[in-house]
Length: 123
Ligand SMILES: *[C@@H]1O[C@H](CO)[C@@H](O)[C@H](O)[C@H]1NC(C)=O
Image (cartoon, rainbow, N blue to C red; front, side, top):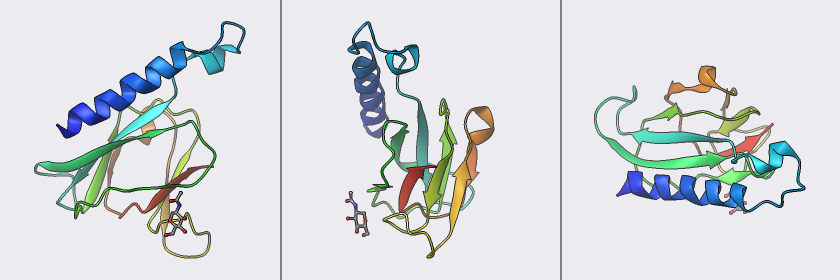
């Protein structure tokens, strides 16, 4: 069920990309870059995962992570981002509080991160 929701989000994003007018630049006509995140109970992305979400590169705003499961780590895969996504421990993307880590574009920006994700923002 959780995977279905994420796939539905991806399909909606793809559909949104298709709807762009023919005159728009190539970059805008392509599907929105995304990265898929799975939240695991353990600290090393082991065992069954609890919830998932898709981070879409379609805003410059801070996006709070609304996953409420008690997760210990997050595994990122399917990274088609072209910009770095900064993931903050706290919500509201605070500059001088809490920790953050950066997810770089492409294949290198995949893997397991054992930090709570309160919010995210493209930098
Ligand atoms: C995100 O969380 C922060 C801190 O809790 C809050 O101030 C802000 O309004 C939230 N943003 C959105 C878009 O919900």
